[in-house]
Image (cartoon, rainbow, N blue to C red; front, side):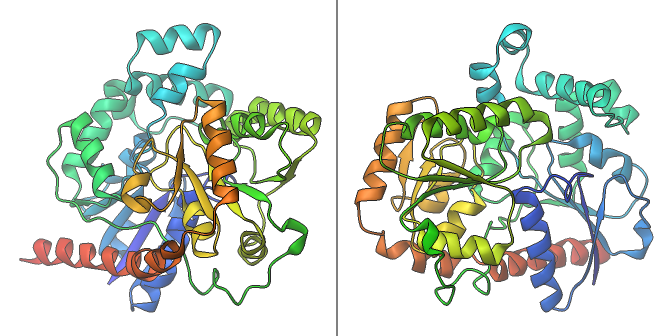
Length: 365
């Protein structure tokens, strides 16, 4: 079986959770005997060299459409169906605030894609996308896919509710690698009892409100991640406020082994996001004995149930109270065992391979 994974053009220059998901799923699929190549959406692809195409990020349909319309090869999509609408609606000002009160979520994403094509020279690749827009393009991709691979049942249901698509799907979990994140890692005691926040620095991840929430406390906050290219002003706001707060440290993207040593030393990990399908860093931190503070917005409760502390992203006091409670309380004992039993990249690869087999068997029958 030979699979081509196709990802956004900025997968490595602006790494995010999808970068880890793609690389680790490919790694463990290879251990199961599957031939997997990873290429970017802006590269020249030889579709017929592969049995199946595997795309990621259905909310970026312009990256996917030119490929599916250039070949008859079957394809699956890891939807990674993130919803930015509430963040956009509540946090934008000026013209953007007006736009978010007038247009729906897909119209806003369409406008943002057009804006990126001008500002960042991200060329629009699909005439279909230009003519039909975000909503119809996503619906077209889902209806013509051989299968959808959401990270949770909750994600699939959100997608169906919005796009009215009744498509086969296989849940493929987001996960951790026990080979990288385990108790053999020595803690970096420079970060002992810190509060960590690991993720790309951008408005959706809500680091600015986290900094505000921990101002005036005795807690040390370490924020790990690169700024998103489209949120540089937000990054500078975070840096400026962090400098004045005095208890905040910033670290750029670091190697997973170093990151594991920080998780091992820290006491709490926080993702007070406006939306998360899962939050990979929450899984990584949880398996290394951090208490977790997370948002309810998205699909997090399906993963973490009652084993995390939940906060509201737009409520500073809610974030502060959840972090302080998580910092004071002992580690949730069942969290680590639950993650190892359900959310490893081995599980993800097995679920992905099961989906591939169904697709290819149906094609050949």
